[in-house]
Length: 297
Image 1: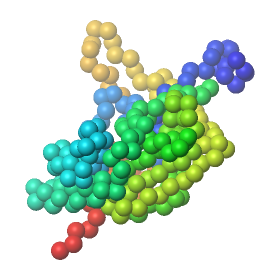
Image 2: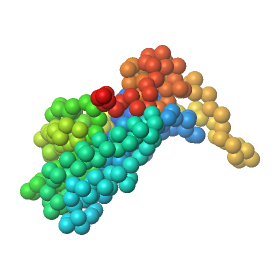
Image 3: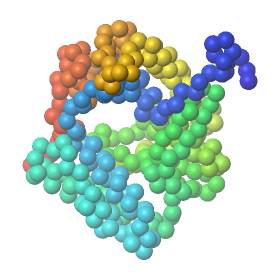
Image 4: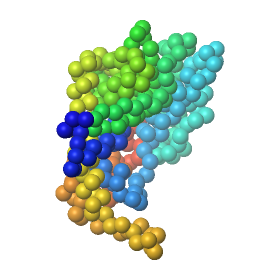
């Protein structure tokens, strides 16, 4: 064990256990990170988002489609799975939900029509994990393909913004998935793809070993910052008395230095905006269906 792996008084450094989502949350806003991962009980969230319902419904339908027997993997079957598993949270009313159910069914069927049902993925909703000297990171891949000797990470996207190769190249999550998949399955994995169902376009990037290593170093750097903040948080949170099972009342004021807000336009979409005066001032709250593409008459 080298010196960098040793912490206080020569003790081994504790690995920081995380997901790409946890790392990205720290980058986006330390206050939101604190509310999501450290505050217990977690502060109440705002209402659910309609675009999340669309995304989850499509993801679930495609995962279910690959689990069907090959002979049953038709575009119509994908649409039926979408309809049966449709999530209704966040929509303005039943009419808007029904319209988006039909839109989502159409995009899911169109996407499935372009797939080869017999081209069995290596994994669907596959959890992969890896570790370095500093982090133990895990995540779930929408689809993991085999193309020749290489693995390919496929991530489904249903948002309204078109995607580019820069999105694929810069994604910390996709890079971590590629590294973890390669180590778990012992096959090379350098290619990552974002499949944008609304447009039918694929944004792709071919990583090198060096670019993947840079992403992993970046993940370790982020994790180091978050781990230090976690320890500071735990040191300040009072422990409940054994005779009193109620959770301790926590004054979060001392945490503002370690977990400052990062106000900006994204505050409109934050689940914890109601608990953040700076976020409320930075951007007005959006309606739960506001991230859906503009509806045409």
